[in-house]
Amino acid sequence: MTGPVHRGQRGAAGVRFAIVFVVVAAVLAGLFYGADAYAHGRVEREVAASLQSELGTPQPPAVDVEGRPFLTQVAARRMGEVHVVADDVGETNDAALPIRHVDLTLDDVTTTDWWKTMNVAKAEGKALVDHEALSRAAGTPLTYSGNGRYTIKGNQSLYGLTVDASVSGRLALDEPDQTISLADATVEVAGYTLPDVVAQQLIKAVVRPIPLEGIPFELRVTSVDARDDGLHVGLGGADIPITR
Image 1 (tube, rainbow, N blue to C red):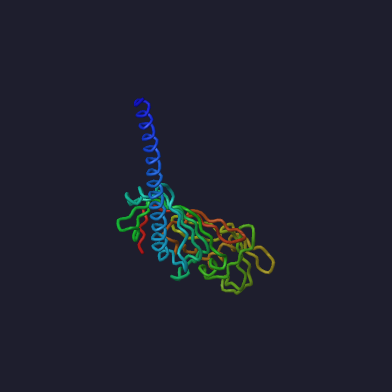
Image 2: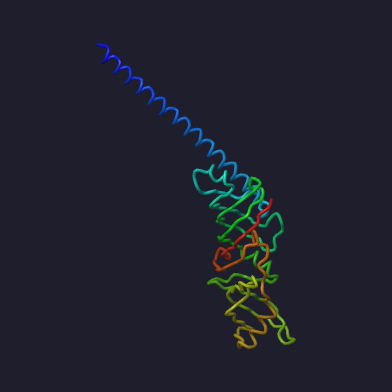
């Protein structure tokens, strides 16, 4: 009679142990998830604060650190990928070329002081520059005229004469020099298109290369594409230090 009772007690004890184990495991998992989420949110806020001064934005940028669990990245002081989105770049630090919107991916971000300063192994992304901001940077009334082309109209000096001219062309990037200038340009004076030789002389006098200064984190411009909503700019860089 005692055998079955003992076996029943052992079976009940085993069930209770399994239940306790599952409960404890669930509690520990919940605590780990909570700690991981807290660390993730805190680091994103720290990174956003560090990036805001570099970007010169009135509001902190949106920062999304990829990868879970996150605590392993905290322990290593290394984040694999950080997505950054910001508006009105350069507004608070009077950048030479204000940027309406920027969308960047930062790869392999390391730190030694809780993300107050960082080093980015590689960065790439895109930016949007308003046509008006580009015109101010050029120092000339550069107007977007559609189909990827810009136009400058007004009195211009040609061989000592003042003429009412219209200069039109697309923007071309000189990547080594980090400047943009008019290419495939045409010049009209009094409704007549000037010959190329004469037109090129006027274009050089009217539209000097526009330096691409004030780009976030000193990234290099890799492409330009003029559209109706602004100048779309490709960005890239490597081994980028970031300080608050």
